Length: 178
Image 1 (cartoon, rainbow, N blue to C red):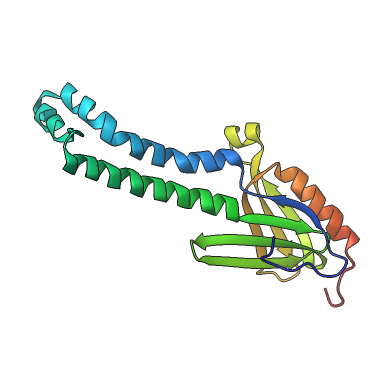
Image 2: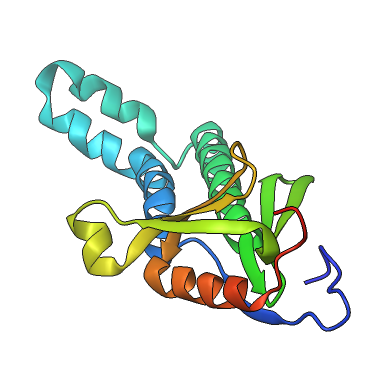
């Protein structure tokens, strides 16, 4: 990753993204939206007062074909934006710090880091049946300053990540005054 430079003696321990299941749940609405133009005419026929509107969805007409193309293009572009955010958002644990790379929009990215020497507490939170079964949770890293928290949402196997963070935080010498 070129979003940040490793310091001398620093190496990447683990890189993780949001759990794949959460990514699929973000894509599900786009799949439903893409199917609407094909399913709606068939549903309208089932409701007699609305049956006459089903004829509007004749995709042999050039105007309706163009409308369908625009509909699917917008849906595809939006779904691609979700994929881009999933792929470019990452948490990277090095032997000296935690780095969060957050893609907000297509041309807006933020990179923040937290030195492990400042870590005071690491908490995991796995809430619900499905997250428990799939191993999805949140990690909250508390620093020496009371108001600074580093939160990672939707991490796969958060307990493993917490243990790795604590292992490297205990190795890293604490800075003076902390």
